Length: 108
Image (tube, rainbow, N blue to C red; front, top):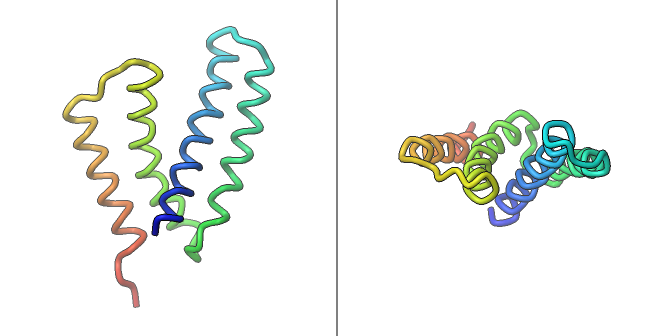
């Protein structure tokens, strides 16, 4: 379980970080090299989930979506300096519960 969670976190950071570098390039007027680095990081993001041991692509990505939401809230807090409010945290908790159900619910 720890390995799966680490892979979700690495994938989330790669997606958010790569997207952020492209944002800085296109929206922030930064160097194209940041955009290219962001694109490379996004390719790495696409590779990371393949190391998950869950057999279903759809379930892995559905569960990852919950983790991504939480990471995006932390990213906004740390990088954009936007303090999450009660509803951000409530939504994040709901997403984590949903991701947990998708991944670890007993199936026949």
